[in-house]
Image (cartoon, rainbow, N blue to C red):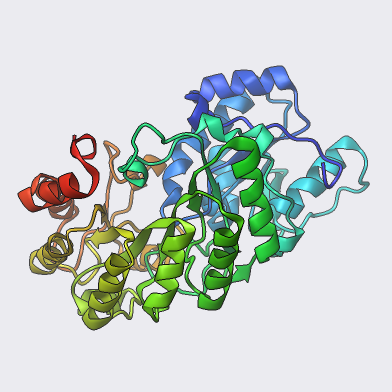
Length: 430
């Protein structure tokens, strides 16, 4: 209610609702506006668009008089296309915070006018009414997340996040300490909503205030730090960790980190002391040539050093790899799998390269005439119609086949099983 606008949150994932059930709930609630969020926090969230599209269409079919706003990565990349193909009344290009509030006030009659709200695109007489992009917001202008509307008791952590205590996965919450990302990796869609690389830190005081509320009121221990790169500003990270330690919070946190942002082991030691037990590193590929082609400038020496420091600090690692980047072939993909097995990460994610809408990879694929998914679900890593990019040397089918076999190879390896048994016990191995 900070801006005089009341809201309810209907988390279809958490409540296990299908689009038709969401539409029924919206129809009963009769809101001034239904905002469908397709997610925009991390690269790959275009995979939410299939469900978002079905949900928008279900609402408009059941209750056509209720205005629907669709926001997220795809709406920011292609607002006119989204309006025509998915059927919302509004598509938000950019962050929806300010446009959403202005639109609700206008619909309620407390804000006069029918002019363009920056960022909110719509159709009028069959023609798109351009609205530019919504302004980037400062994290300090955002109120604290309304945790009473999405109680952490309804959520549970990833299984790997709690390998040391699998019976304690709930309650669970996620917060951010910074917004945006200053990097421009060609495969990544995290800056599509903002429209440019950016980095917007949140004050330490507001982060601590939110953690305190989650711990004291909701009993949260398992916490995800949503930042695209938590470790970008070492001084900020160390100050935050020092404060968490001083407050005596008992936390089990994980965060994304970038290899080149880890410049000394001291920061890792402080993170571990504060409860950062897992770091997810975007290594992507073992071949420096493959990495350089997608604007990843890490060297093998840097990776070896940082992985060693992380393990020395007692922090577990999620290694993220992408198979099928433009310069990949069977040999370079095997190098990536061999690297993952050599490091023996406690968890590894193996993705296929996708030309996510709005990314440089997508633009290059369009220019080259490369076949792209015909549906939003085709961008899913495990959907039936998944269609990853072919490389300059491999077909999409070869990439998927390698990825699937790599997953089985990694998680059935005796060395991996022995390590997991030693660190976490038989329940985690099972």
